[in-house]
Each structure stands twice: as C-alpha cells, then as structure tokens.
Length: 474
Ligand code: BG6
Image 1: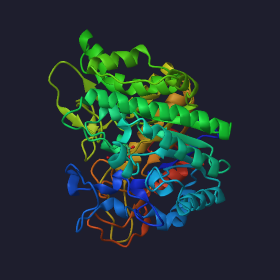
Image 2: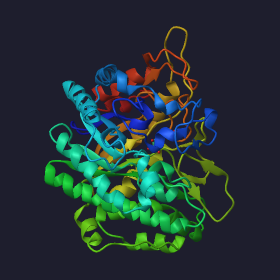
Image 3: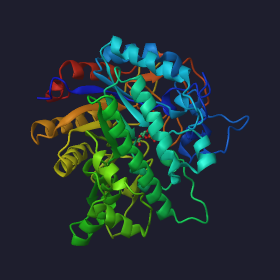
C-alpha cells in the first residue's frame, strides 16, 4: 500500500508561474531577461529588458494575482503538498541588498497561510532556475565564491521567517544540470566567455553551489531541527543501447554528472565517481580550507528528483533525443511526446531503485509529467486522456517500486500542476497542468482556470491513496 502520509501534490517554479516580474519591489532575475520563443526555437538571453519585446514569463500564468483561486483548486484535488519555489529576487531584489524586501516576504507568507488553510504542506525550493540578475553583472554569477555568502544569507532570512510555516525545503533545483546542460544560464547564470575553460567554470560553480547547499542545510537545522532539507537531482536515466561491454562503461560515464551532485549532497564528499567525472572533462577547481568539513556536515535529509524520460548510450551511432537539459540516444522501444521526449514509465521504477540502492535515503519524486498541446473545446472542457494515460503508467510503476521493491518514497508532485511557461522553450502551449489556463503565447486570453479531465482523475487517485491504479483502465 502507498502509505497514508504520502505527499501527493503538484509542482511549479516561481519564474515560470508567478508573473508579476517587477511588482512590489521584485528585482530582475536571470529568467526575466530570457525571451521565450514561439514553437520551441532556442531562447534568447538579453542583458536587460528590451523594449517592444514580449517576454512570456513576465506575466506567466499569473499565480501572483491568482494564488487564492489556484490553491483552492489544488485543495479540491486533495493535494497533501504543493511544491513551489521562492524567487530570490523578490526577497533580495539585487541579491546583495542590505535589507530584505518586506513585500516579497509578505507575499510568501500569504501563500503559505492560504495553503495551510487547506492543510496543504508547502515544499519549497530555494533556487529554481532564478537568481538576481545583478549577481551576474556584478560578480560573474556562480563562478564567484562571494555568491555562497549571499545565497546562505537569503536562505537564513527565509528559514527564520517561515520556520513555523514550512517544513520541507530543497536547495538547488536540478543542481546537476549545471554539469549536463550546454547552457548553464538557467541553473547558474553563466554564459561561457571565450577566454575561459568551460570545464573549470563548471566545476568551480558546482563547488560553490555545493558548499552553499551544505551551509544552507547546516543553518536550516540550527534554525529549526525539524526541517527536512533535500537536494533536487535531474535524473536522466540512461540504458546501454546494446549488450556490448563497452556500452556499459559509456552508460556509467553518462550518469557520472548526476551522481556527482548526488554523492556530494547525500554522502558529503567528492567520491571516486566525482573524481572520475573531473578527470573525464579535464577540469580543475579550488577548495577553501574548511570546505570538506562543511560538505561532510551539510548532507541532505532526503533526495528530491525529477524524472521525465530515459535515454540510451552506445559507441554506435544513435538517433538523437533532445530534452530541455539532457541529450542522449533514442530508444526504439519507446514512444515519444509531441516534444520528442521518450515515454518510459518503467524507467521511473528503475530510477527509484537505482537511487535508493545507492543512497538508502528517503526519495521524493518532485517532478514528472507530460508537456502536450491541449485543446479547449467549445463547451469549455479539455479532454487530456493522453496525460491520464501517461500518469497512470508512471504512477503504477511508482507504486510497484514502493510495494514490491520497498523503496522509501515520501511523495509525488506532478510537474506544472497548473499550466505555466516552459523552462526549455518559453512556451505556454507546452502544457503540463491538471488545470488549463486560458492564455496563449502571444499573451491573449482571459486567464480563466479550467479543470481538465486529468483534474478529476488525479482527485480520485488521491482519494483512493493510489488504489485506483489497480483497476483496469483506471
Ligand atoms: C525540469 C525543470 O527540468 O523540467 C522545470 O525543473 C521544467 O523547470 C521541467 O519546466 C519541464 O521542462 P520544460 O522545458 O518542458 O518546461
């Protein structure tokens, strides 16, 4: 049985959902100067806001002004938890301000109060692809060790403020994406300069963030020993394409970038896996005195991770699969979504087992879901049976991992529970939600919230603690 206290819910991120990018004292973030492109063309990053340019994320789907309505809908579905992020630039508009912005702090107070009204537990990410833009211009973003102090100060301010309202926290969203993505702008505010060695920058920025993450855990536990503070890994499960022995080595190598972050955050030191990765990219970085102790003491309480698809690896030529961050080979046994992401429910069970076997710490699936084009019918309904099918299979695989494999899993939050702006392509038409938001990629629409068929399905699933999955065609 899925445990009674299982945290069923949904997930979003501030920069993709809140909108209100310049309201109530919020400063500009790196996400605010990234232009969404229509139809999945690579996004453009500006130095500052450009006139006469449309930035979809500036209003996004406007949680900022609809949070009461949206939370009421989450409550109707029976959410036990809601994963969201705090925008650092709402709290410290420039990242290095003397004082925090009271209006920003108040906004999240209001959101947490609203959630508690319905007994929904907030699960809060501190850094979800968003940091004050000033920190890029003034310090060179996460290349610079100075950011450790600033990030820890931000964490301490929000921990103190919400210590009685939030118990579950995560430090960096998909921290390991910094090592995986060719565009570390999202995760670390970095655009490689011509005169720098990319491998060194990657490792140094990672180290700075890993130290910041560990210090955040240490400080958080001092402020409230009951806090549960996790990491959040991108988990691009990789299979060997053939049974050739060398394909197994390549497959392991592909996963090094993920376990690099996992090993440091969970085990508290750079393991042989990490050193293997450092050698493979010929990168170097500097540690300060005391860092090793910080990493050892600041290990996480649980492992949050995102799972969207699996990929294959081989020394043979492969058809390419491109996600928003990870790139790999296509698996001929799997179908793909409209955005070319492979659909592999069993891969979720495999991932849960891999992570639990390796770390023996509670896991939390904090992102999983399917981006699709939904059609709003004239009668105001949205029939997203493909999404129900996707979720049904993934959640059945999750249930098997809990019940048969005895993986310790805390909860499941479906990504983009209300439609929002895609991180990878900046589109709204790539919809994930149980709740449709009437807005298009040109900014037209009423912003009305509409329940999709999956809304009713998820509600029933939570009501039955997942037992619905045992019924045929449930
Ligand atoms: C994850 C990110 O990688 O994937 C989310 O943490 C993102 O921010 C999600 O939205 C889905 O990706 P995309 O590109 O379809 O929005």
